[in-house]
Image 1 (spheres, rainbow, N blue to C red):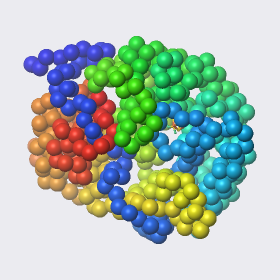
Image 2 (image 1 turned 90 degrees about the vertical axis):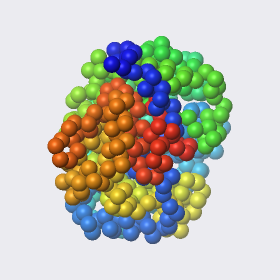
Image 3 (image 1 turned 180 degrees about the horizontal axis):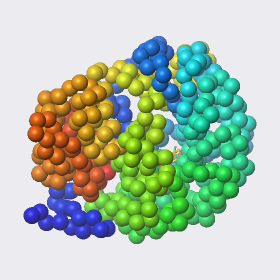
Length: 483
Ligand SMILES: C[S@@+](CC[C@H](N)C(=O)[O-])C[C@H]1O[C@@H](n2cnc3c(N)ncnc32)[C@H](O)[C@@H]1O
Ligand code: SF4
């Protein structure tokens, strides 16, 4: 019998946890990860669109718009953003207007390549901070989408909101424009942790925004929280989660702090000596899990919690969740089209295409009517099969060999012979449980808590772009693991 430790009601073997924790491993917002992509050019995006439409004419689609601007920098931020402070006068209007004109130009070019009867089922505005825009800019983009694209009547339309710049007027405007979901960057409620990362927003401010959003008629509100940053402790996380539960968001993304200071220069300004270690982060996660589930939230995938009647929890129940660049979506089965700087398009079973990351270069392409694609990946048959396995792992915390065998006409046992041998090792360590099945392979469950907190290690077994032993040694400079 292995010795177990109890943390926040969950029992696990801490020695085994130490064996796998803290490695550099991807969290697979895509498979293959962008590190396995190649250079691409302007023709690839419309070509992939055409191929997808020829092969899957009934498939709906989802639109992502990237608004890179923010008023001030948050030191932890790993997003593609451009800081243009508004406090110095009108200096922000010109660059913002220029960018939005070019983004609108690209939205306006979509009808030339999207089949007119294809239904637009989801629109997501992310960034950066879409709340940086003026109401007029938001109205103009929303009107263009309504007029030029075949937006479904019951489409899900969402925006990432910075509570520091969200007013009741803006919320009423979004409601009138047909927005259905809001996602707020909350991160943490602790004053010291907030000050250190330069993201000061007291609890009362977030509460007022939530109250105003409910008053405006929004029924689906998401909070982003981050654990694992400097000055966060078990007790500050307890308080942050308790205050979050008090405000009753419908979903919570409980992100592990992704620390990549060699890529994100501003993260170097953080006091990394004050960062919690792997075991404290494990305690923080399990504490969050305990508090959220006791409060009636369901644990979904790697790091999300959702109320049982929320669409994310329902999709998890039905097995229609999909992992993507916004974390987790109910938009399984939709092609994703990314517009704006650094945006990524994902044509299911066809490939990925990413736009140029530099704002000026993006604007140059748009002004010359060139699609700004610079890299991507056309998917091989093997990529598509492994992508389906990754989706099952990250969204359902299990692998269902019979579904993969039906869909891809493979023998799971033969196809994943090497991987199954590694999984037997992970089963001995308690990360997975393989149900016996006479001839093929039975269902493979990712265990709670050990397998769920080390989910990236399990997924790494199936990632052929990593070294074969990456699941226990780590690989390259990915975001550090959940643990
Ligand atoms: C584009 S921002 C959300 C909207 C808005 N800009 C804001 O901050 O309120 C997307 C989210 O990414 C998450 N994020 C950014 N950098 C991160 C990092 N280094 N580790 C984990 N999560 C991070 C934050 O939770 C943030 O809310
Ligand atoms: S966390 Fe949000 S507001 Fe802060 S810099 Fe990043 S994108 Fe901008």
